Length: 188
Image (cartoon, rainbow, N blue to C red; front, side, top):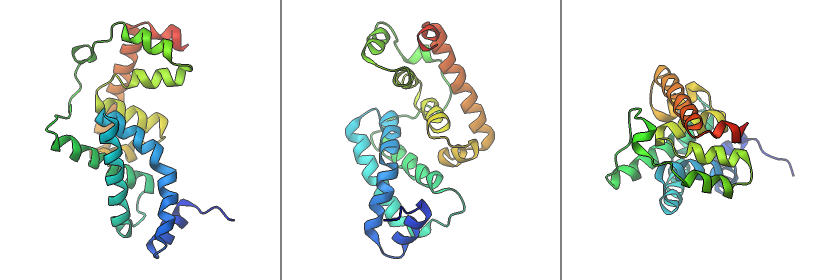
């Protein structure tokens, strides 16, 4: 059996082969769930948001013109779905860069996290999780999912300049967090 490309899967679903949508779900479910979990800080909310996002993607797939990569369009829907859930629960999204120390208590919990993780990549992701939501999200989209700054700007609905600034601030916040707690020795 020939493995279909992402574009072939999309065209197949558009032509009415709705069962092929499961192939898109298999491709994106884990990464999208991970992003939603980081944004919503709750597994049940993340699962609900993931289902909502895939339903929105399925219902509006005919509107996808292919002007951008499918992943950019998809992550935009995932991101907006998470924002909708957050606003419905009357949470505030942190829109500006605040100092990490003002928002997070990083005491002995860090040693416990390191003791429980088996590899450095998992440990780094747990450190990233301590950043404010938007900062963690931009780090994950850029370094883990490999999205370009242009794609990140589309996902977050901000200009490319603002995406660059957010990535720069996020890197600095992550570096400061690593240096403040002497994680560089552990990571290196």
